[in-house]
Length: 376
Ligand code: PAD
Ligand code: ZN
Image 1 (cartoon, rainbow, N blue to C red):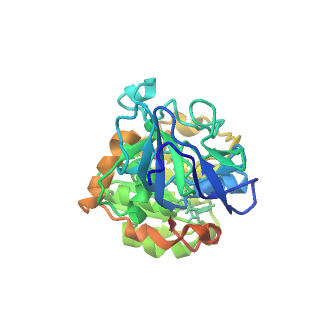
Image 2: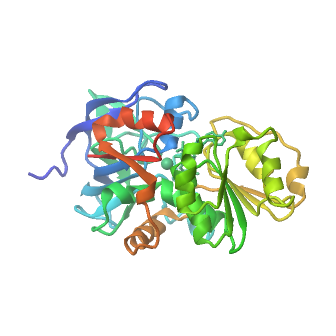
Image 3: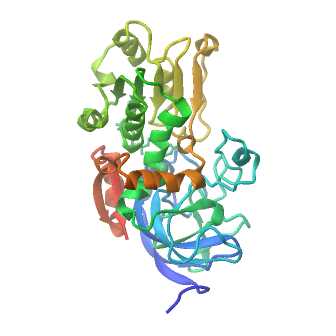
């Protein structure tokens, strides 16, 4: 029997307050309103950005349904939806692409004005939620909210993909892979023969390593305080790995020593800490180096630095979702994966049922996993 137009009762992982585990409860998911899409989630990866909410580093409204790296199938659509239909395989977009705002229209822009960043509302565009628990509204994370059997997103925040794509793999194209890989190929525009340093070798950082390799970098130096991440980094293209804890000198000086005093051409911070953002920036060449911030900074964090560090010519920039225009690029990235232009398997260390979500986050915090994919 069709569920279209009806409230769906389903399981969701709700976080009631920071520093508390997920509780799996039965929620009600209202039908999609005009220009909205209700999606049955098939797989959802665990990303550090979700954990930044749990740790309190990112400020959001509670109670909330986290999760933003998913794949699913359209269950029903609201009035006026033209880009997807029931039965389509889709990836929800934590960074929407409305195709109308000034950023979307600009050829270089990808920060859609509809993105729910900064001071996030956790709501649909009309200021309401489609999720309730015993009548109480539940917020959703960054336009998506995918740790639930069903979610509702705006049409701007969903892309139709190849129906044959494996959900438990291509969900990573919804965040980790695209973010890391695009930081190298789009945001930094790494050039053949260059030297790169990637700070943080989690799912996103390893994808940056892959992007640097695909762009033809000849040296890729992985930097992480967990040496267990090094073998996988080398498998994916890192030519050397260093652990800052093994040196008395600051890591930027170590990287200058490793590059004959020049510094690296491109550095990437893929951790989300202000001290490593500074370390990455000061590791790149003082004149022509480029440093890209990929790690999400904690809400309200600040960095004080001497302008001389960039006055000399260095470029310091950030990268959201790897610089991709999401709705245009996600289907193409899925096609590229299907044509074996890049791999996702090495990034996925664990796959487990959705109700083991707390175990999945423990693996991330203990440094034992790269990506854990929850399957529904
Ligand atoms: P992860 O936790 O899997 O990886 C982070 C890595 O950093 C781990 O291997 C840690 O051992 C390592 N690390 C921690 N502290 C240090 C340190 N002081 N020095 C060196 N290494 C350290 O996270 P992830 O790969 O899922 O995400 C990485 C960051 O990227 C995180 O901040 C996340 O929120 C952010 C992100 N940004 C975007 C975006 O659009 N910019 C999208 C998705 C994720
Ligand atoms: Zn993410």
